[in-house]
Amino acid sequence: MLAPHRESAELTDPLELVELPGGQNWDGKIAYLDRDGVINVGSENYVNSPAEVELLPNAGLAIGNLRRAGYRIVVVTNQSPIGRGHWDSDNLDDIHSELRNRLLIEDSDAHLDLILFSPYAPWEGAWARKPNSGMLEAGRQLVEAASNNVDFTSMELLFDAEWVERPDESTSFMVGDRGVDMAAAENFGVRGIRCDPNIGISGVVDSILGGTA
Image: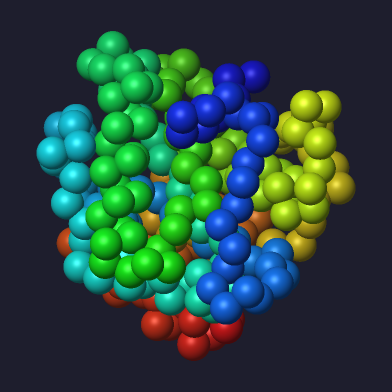
């Protein structure tokens, strides 16, 4: 099983969550977000450095609104440049640090609770790579564990058919700009919402909050 990787940490390292705005209690809602074409401008040649990070319009405000509505934010992104040998995970960490900074400049509530990525090339057949649902599976378990103060030192993540007793995902959703994102949502059993890659999350957030908040 080729499992997901996690920004700047081992997959099952302890996860510290930033308190939701207004001190509200989390009720299990997660917004699973693809990255390129949802939060930032994508490129056929990849986003290769922090200098190439460009937020889509009002992405920070949209994510801030989601957190103000009680959602945890889990980014799930295929990053095959690592598997293809173009650059390494340290470079990706720098890209994600820049992404986080720009979101928070736009909206101080726009925290990304967790970033998971698949470093594998398409031909490796990784369960972590969308359209498979490995990143979403890991995201749910890690956020739940952090919220419930589970001891991460003994934590073992479950994937695919091994994860039998799954929580209800009816109040969560996945936003992506491509078919593989919608397939990952379907495979995971969560509502998939496709956005325009030129507009991103801000183009669908009002309809999400109007229907689920």
